[in-house]
Amino acid sequence: MSQSTSIPKKMQRVRVHGYDNYMEVEKKTRKVLKVQNIILNEQNQSLPISRLETLVHRIASRATQSALSSSSSLTSSRSSSTPCSASSSAASRAWQSSKSSRSVPRAVTRLRKLLMMSNTQRLRLEHVRIARSALGLPDDFEFSVVLRVLEKEFTERGGDAEDVRFSFLINFPPGFKIGKYFKIALWKWQRLPYWSPYEDVSGYDLRSIEAQKRMEKRAIATIHELLSLTVEKKITLERIAHFRQAMSLPNKLKDFLLQHQGIIYISTRGNQGKLHTVFLCEAYRKGELIEPNDLYLARRKLAELVLLSPRKARIDRELVGYRRSRLDDEMG
Image (cartoon, rainbow, N blue to C red; front, side, top):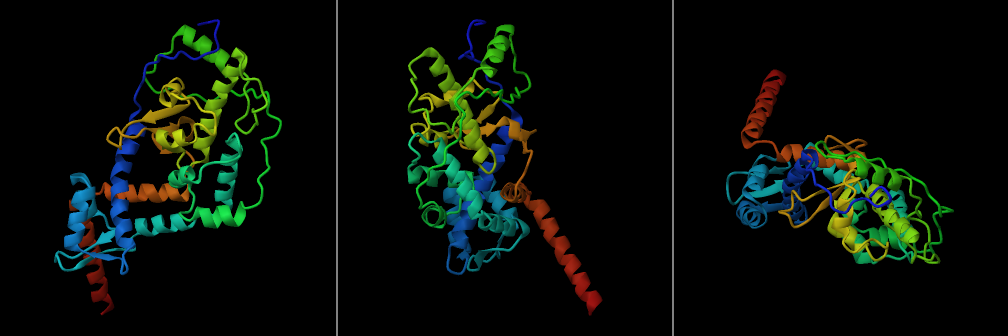
């Protein structure tokens, strides 16, 4: 092992509760947003209670039904004939405004970098569409960004980056055991030169062992850069796999990423084990984004409402009603 620059393939996996808890909360938030978006897409932005209950039973769990009843982003009456509507609560307004504030210049920058990391400067549009939410792209990015701004031929390159020497910031999770030979291999791997994700490597001879090592480290750099382009510095492994061929990523992507747990963290929580969410470790501290943005803050605010218990929500509504009635009496 001491003679190699490769990271050991068989490594222990240590769970980090901060990331896993993040995904458990997001699971509930996604279902609430799904119901809210259905209501907002209605002509009068309202649904009969009877139809809403059927809808909730079909797409939401018991925990989500409780969250819906306590969430102040949805208002309704007890009568089944009274429509349920999306209110203008603080979280709902923040969520809607954050969606509309996905500026075109930022979207252009993200798309340009994605194209620069592809081998042919081309990506399948449906793959970008699947990942548009994680990348912070507007829903109509095909028209507002691609056709309007990127219709000219794209010729930018990443510059002269043939021999990059970059040590990744590695934060191993608590309880992760690091042996002496692993430290030596990691030390050598950190100092291994590699080609930049934005460098065109089509003209290089990639058959040598040295070239293969460079390409392996380049793959980590590409995924690191892809995660950096996302709004919350995380994206599902399955969406990364869509770009595998275009960006020359390894076939067994999950096994490959598990060799670099200090750089990324893979969570299986929040999706019933069906999806794997990849986090960029250096962007988080104790399960929270170090440099939050408007969209991230809006999602966290909505998550707080989702986790609000029905009892506390009822007490808060009673207090608000009491204060309003008292204010009306004073004004009268």
